[in-house]
Image 1 (cartoon, helix red, strand yellow):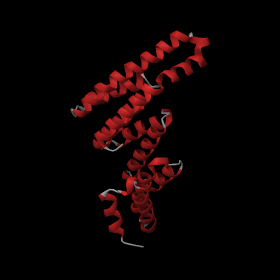
Image 2 (tube, helix red, strand yellow):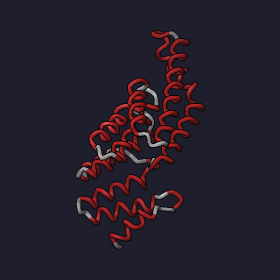
Image 3 (cartoon, helix red, strand yellow):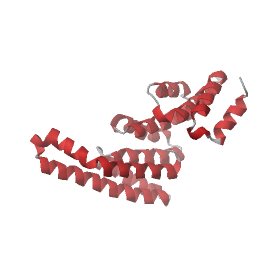
Image 4 (cartoon, helix red, strand yellow):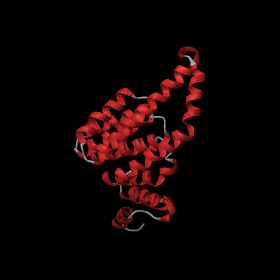
Length: 209
């Protein structure tokens, strides 16, 4: 999810997922924990938590659009602390990490991205957080560690982005052959055969094999 536009796209995808699967998920949870909480009470609680978190995140998106970073940070931390088991907590952490990177506060950005890796359950969110953490690590001079972080999981539909970031990491360590190979893999895996101009430039800068 690069930039605000793609963040908004993921929110819309999340809303669609919740609309289609939320009730089933709530019922499954109720079956597992009903003996402790009581079926209806547990369902009502989970539904209320999700709705409250969604409303809070809608406000966060508006504040993000208005570039009100202080409000975003405050509301984002509130969502994480109050609704940690909802998907919106991970999305809030992603938004906070983005702001911290823009501010040059890489330590805080890494903390938020690591929180996602430790707590989120949505595969796409986990992969997105891993990619962004790898980028921060490259910026902080930990390019080799970034490659290890990316290699630890199957990138699934994120193969092009994963390989491009790996190419950046190899380039940072001076391993130009590995960088070229990673960029070529990213180029070949680009969706609809339309790699970004930036990726094309990276390949051009390294020259042909």
